Image (cartoon, rainbow, N blue to C red; front, side, top):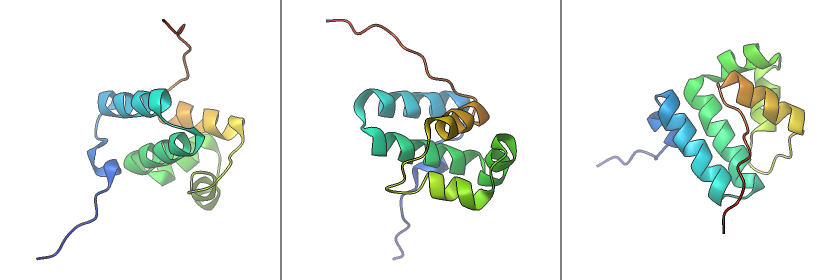
Length: 94
């Protein structure tokens, strides 16, 4: 019996699912997990499409969103915009 590797990108098939996933990671994750999640979202949408919309090359995009990468904030913002997302701040309640 052949096992297939789980890939979250296979399940990010709607804007709602993408938003829920990213919001959960933003709420609970660390910086590395957030970058990884943005990479999963970019993969789900299509790296070529995201590269075109950000003005980045595909290799640069893969490198910026790879494990252990420390992309610039401007890169994160470009990718978030390209995937149809944004950062929003809500006050923390006690």
